Length: 309
Image (cartoon, rainbow, N blue to C red; front, side):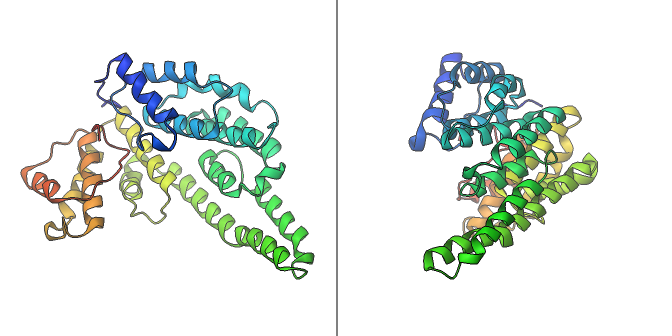
């Protein structure tokens, strides 16, 4: 199977990528399909200069994930060679660490994780940007470790604890960080362990769990992990056979009750997400499946989907 059916000319592909990456809040929500993967890589290297902000880098990462553009990673390596110069650079470096966590080889991901722990965790920005930090740790896994950032949060809670009763502002400052310690750190640990466990399973064993993860029905649910699971399914399909994945998604389509479609948005979303994935892996919907697809009305944004919209 292929990542996408190339159907855009170079000019059209460049325009689509430009609009997605640099369109800001008014740009498309989904990575454009149909662009030639080598063109994607050339565009990123040409356009992603040192002035790119973290939002543009984040959208670039989304493009890299869909097109599996690991070949552009050397372009970004020099940008995580030292400590961030300011808050904006801190965010940019975190996103670049995510790039290496998602697309790099083991040694590259480990180097990014070392940079994260040595040059980002100690910085003042790490505390107010805890959501970005925990997201990056999840993406880097199995490289790296949660412990240094967890220790940083624990230290901050201890620092704020003695003054927490001195004023309302002090109490709020303490409680905010304590909530990260109490809720977000354990959640991140569970997600990281779940990701590691799936990676240790053999492809036949994890086919069903990955399908359930992508559909949001797994034991753990997280937007990043859903697309990560989709990419893992795709990698396995491209190296072996896409039919098992197509068949597994087809079973989901068959299992959605006909009378729920057009009435229950959740059933619509599940049906369409599974149907698009089945087609993405080369499956051809049967007449009964096409009838179901025609009845679903809720639109969805799907990673495993080569349709234009």
